[in-house]
Image (cartoon, rainbow, N blue to C red; front, side, top):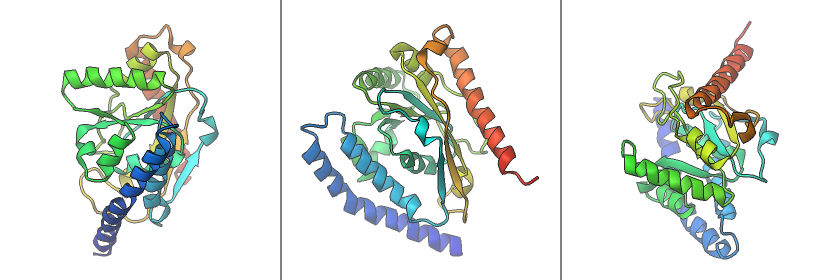
Length: 249
């Protein structure tokens, strides 16, 4: 019962704060867009907005490891494993510039989705080949402008916490654009907010681990499939290693 009450308060706060903060986002956009064509200031404000929900929630203490591995001087294809709806909020805690690739349904959410459009995040209609082609073209243009891209190569959240197979799109993009790949590991979000349901599950620490960047020179000779499996293996190994260190002896 207590978890349901807490969850109701949390989602209510998210709705009310979104109504209040979206006009601020519009103001940030209007003031900065003439000289900030990449919308870095708006994304920074959006990172603050999203981070409020983990900063103010004692049940979700977030640790970021390897933040120093993030580079701001070049665009990268950023990829992370996907466990929960919470992953989207949590990844804003790295406070670096990127454009999300997200399913089109998220852009229809009042205030939050409108802010995604304002940020020029990139939409994707799942199962629609034409939408995939359009998304890839938009990603290439966005990378060429100096913006990193954030993608979940699993495509959708895992219902079990076990990593799904990776789709090749992010890795095909990295090869075509000759951009580095920035792997990121998420832990704890599936326990905090499982895939099916909106009831928060008590206190669960969350960890973001930024792995070493993979330079494009290192995968020039790999096929897209080989690169896809290589990055998946890196994230899987990092997850396994972290779980071993966190497990009681």
